[in-house]
Picture (cartoon, rainbow, N blue to C red):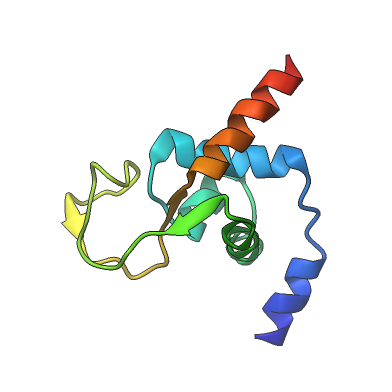
Amino acid sequence: MIMVYDLSKNVNLDDDLIFRILNHFRRFGVDYAKSVGRDIEMNKREVCMILKKLYDMGYLEKRPSGMLKRSEAKLKKRVTTHPHHTYYHLTEKGYEFLKNYEKNKK
């Protein structure tokens, strides 16, 4: 566990990276670290720690456990399954970050 924690200290969490991750959730809805990592081409451990930081910052919420349907998590291969991962989704604060980031980039 200490190794993962030390790894997270070295991740540069800038606005561009936050935007890429939050934009993934805006496009695909509910998702988990491994899937996000594949999309943005990052190590799963790094993404896991970043998602925890974004959760602590209020940009993401954890999805309650239970059955998860493909309509909620668009990248899932099966129609329904029991989640074996920690799934996250965007909060209003996350949507606001995306909106402000895009407005400032124009």
